[in-house]
Amino acid sequence: MQQEVIDILEKIKRPLSRTEIAQELQVSLCIVSHAICKLIKNNELKIIEIDRNQAMEKYHCKRRMRLYYY
Image (cartoon, rainbow, N blue to C red; front, side):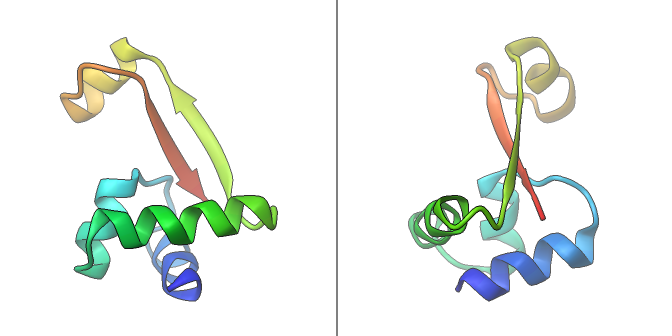
């Protein structure tokens, strides 16, 4: 699953949220979260954290978000 996450991030070429990655791969959020955790521990993924205001504007989310990129 880790390689699939990397492949999606390379294909899309922009930072994605966990939910977006799960939707692209058509798997559960839990599976994606587990793969992302392993990739971060191995320093294979980078994280951008956006604040509530940016998250609301771009993603209609009411809390801060983490976006992942390769």
